[in-house]
Image 1 (cartoon, rainbow, N blue to C red):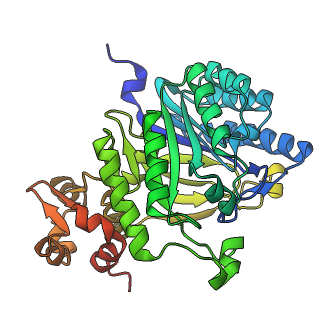
Image 2 (cartoon, rainbow, N blue to C red):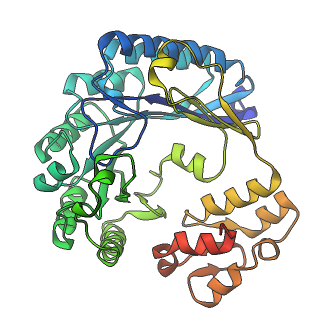
Length: 381
């Protein structure tokens, strides 16, 4: 039976909650430590108002992914979380099988909180573990320990979450290949449906960035070896790498994040939240107080022309295991892929990119140096 939702275009919603107990030493996301009760309440009220306003843009769309990111969304009082979810459901056509994800820090969500948000309709949890090693967690400035994570994971299962993602990091202070292997092994034993593994990137305006040479990290070769070990270990455990940094059991890929990589439309609500909608990219100011005060009408806007769409499609889809489909590219842009991006031939010859007659994709060797290859293909010099 065909429903109204089947006839509508699909849309994703991202909702930014910029409050943390404490900023991690590597974090440059739009977030603030603490966040007094009055500010949090005003911010939540603005989110609800903004959701109502943006719903007018989304007529004719069915929302099939919702993502609460941060910051730490589970720092929101449970009542405010419920109100924001109600605003989503009352203003948007959210499909019955929508993937609704909430990020959480292991030190911020009680068993009761997790049980309640599951009843509210959140059906996917993304837990920021980063490492199973206590010394590495301290070096990152995380507020949780290994036992906090294990308790949160167990509580999430008991609350009914059967779709859990765990975030890991490599290339971090005090980490060795052996400690990273141990983290992977202990994580896999819990059988989460999804695992993300990101290499630490030191951003300038962070405590790590200000440490300069005092910050001791695994070197590039060591970090590359850690990534290779991660790919192999997770493959043996039944996790397929469907994107450079993301691994999933069959059918448990992040539908919301796939939306970004496939260039599909989404609306971002909240301070610093970005959107891609109607051929435009636009974003809210990162000023959290201003958003809480209702100052969110003026956004930076950028019309995406054909050339930029071509480049973005290559940059994003090549992150995926499936890569870029040659027929789809030519159908959309009216030019063969290799005609427009002729440098790809060099990397096919070198064995870093494979073409099977349908898709251009990175080989295992290509994934290790994907940033360099993309810069050469897209000529960002």
